[in-house]
Image (cartoon, rainbow, N blue to C red; front, side):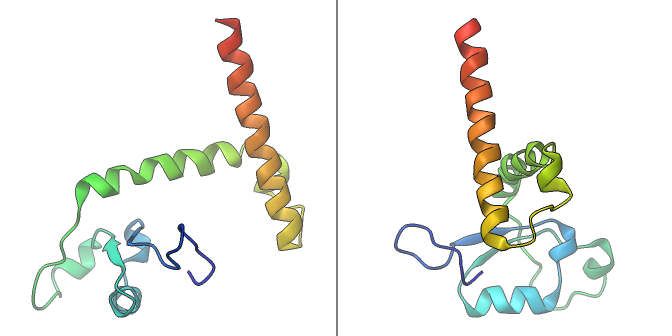
Length: 113
């Protein structure tokens, strides 16, 4: 989270995650840094929850699918899915190459129609 930059902001306004990230420790950390949590509660937490119910912005949570789709097509690149590159710098270069390749493929298919 410390490495995320959005324009001049160092931290995002909201963080979206699935139910696997629904832990009190994560929610406390997000509150401390004034980051909105877009994380649904797990079913085992709903029964034990005390105080105010956890609010979920469903519209923001639905937009999370864009990121999931992006990760899905990045994993079609075998080199990224198996993490052949051990250095983070090399891995980031391969991610950028995969994105460029994807865009070129999209541009090529739009030229044919």
